[in-house]
Every structure is written in C-alpha cells, then in structure tokens.
Image (cartoon, rainbow, N blue to C red; front, side, top):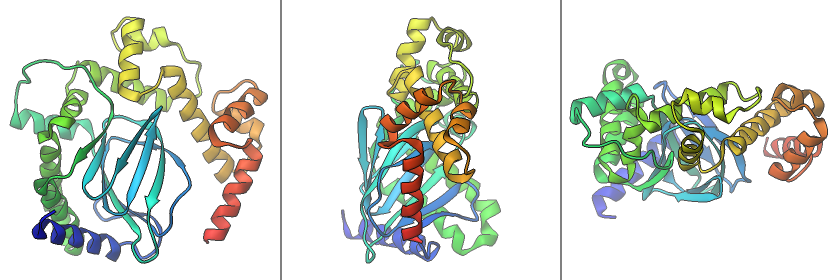
Length: 303
C-alpha cells in the first residue's frame, strides 16, 4: 500500500472513530450507512446480511456462509447481493486499535440504474454466482467511500450529495470483475434476480411450510434447476436456508421477548418443541434456555 493509500485508510479510520465513541452498531445521518465498532474479539454472531457493501477500516473479520468462510480486512471488501444468513466473527480487534467497519445498504434499483447508464445491454446472461463475494479494495473505491463518509462532517450536504456518492460507489464496485454476478441480481428476468425474489419471500414467510416445487414455479424454473441455482447463490439448500432463518429469529425472540422456548418454536414454524431444541443446540451449541442465559451473562459482563 503506497503512502497516499495509507493516508486515505487512516482518514477513514479517523472518521469512523469520531462517530463511534463506544462499541456497537451506530446508525448515521446517511440512512443507508452504518458504522460498527468493537474493541475486543467477538464470539460467532449469527445474523442476516442484506444486500450491502461491507468495508473494514481497521481489524479483520471472518464471515461463514454455509460451509464456506470469507475473511476481509482493510485490503478487501465484501458485497452481499441477497439476504443471506451468516455467521460473523471479529478476529482482529483491541482497545488501542478497535475493529472499525462500515456497511452501506443498497437496493437493486440503484444497481440497475447504474448498469443502464454505464452499459445499456450486457452481452450475455451469466449464471448467478455466489451471493457473497470478497474483492480486493481499489484506490478509486476507497476514494468514493471517503467522499460519502466525509459528508457526515457537513450534514447539510447529505441530501444533495449522498445519492451521487452512493451511485459512484456502486459504479466502482461493478467495475470489479469479481462482482460481475452482482449485475445479474439487478437485471429483471435474470436467473439471479428470480432467485433473489424467492429469497426475499423466504425471509418474509419463513414460518410457513417450505414447498420447493412452489418456489421453483415462482422463479419460473424446473425444480432441479431452481435447487441448483439456489444453492449456487446461497451456498446451501432451500431447507438449510429456511432452518437458519428460523433458528436465528427464534434466538432473537428468546433474547428480546422473554418467551418460552416452545412459544418461540411455534412462532418460527416448528411443530415439535423437541425437534426445535435439537436443531437449535446443533446450530448454537447449547439448548435454547442455556444459550440465552449465556448470552445474557455475556451482555451483562460487557455492559
């Protein structure tokens, strides 16, 4: 990394530190932009990534999707093209040098708008590719990101200039060949876009029984083609995907709503509490009640 790149990276660290005085996730005055800060290594955190760009300014993180792991740090960045249930873990952080990152959410209309302006017709329709990609950071992308976050220091400029800064960021991301699949998720009628629509529905209707043939019909694909494309995008089968979404939502309910495990199981679509408890323990390492007790003790110690 040359001296100018180092200075830009240091500037990004400075701005994020300024707007994150304590550990946690911090919303900003730019609605699509949030900052994350943590001064210690984290346990695995289960969450759902929405379509977004994730950049680490300081420290490093590992994200697990299905059976695959993705590590990114200030030399790289991560893009998520669809809603994906992941396991994330900060693996480099300290009090003196906390983990600092940003997440910029976007929607497919923004991406499609940039595609139409820069390349009206794609030569061919590609297969979707994985919905999670780690790419090497470029100077042009880092410059565009800095222009966006600097607007937080002049909030009166945000309504006018932020949309243009975000548009440039999307353009720079799409310029990277490793993000070619991202274009497909925005193109109406493409295989990727149809899978993305089904994924949205599964995130919304996760408590209902899963019928792969119905999802395939909605995507206008044969059942076998749908299954293959879905696994290519998400790294897991439709049943595995639904299971992760259900269990993550059940964990959130148990932690925030103080309900019984059986009630949480019912709310997320399980008919058998014992089946729910077995799958919960397999995913999180402990049965529901013990896991929630551990989480609350951890949060109390951090507080």
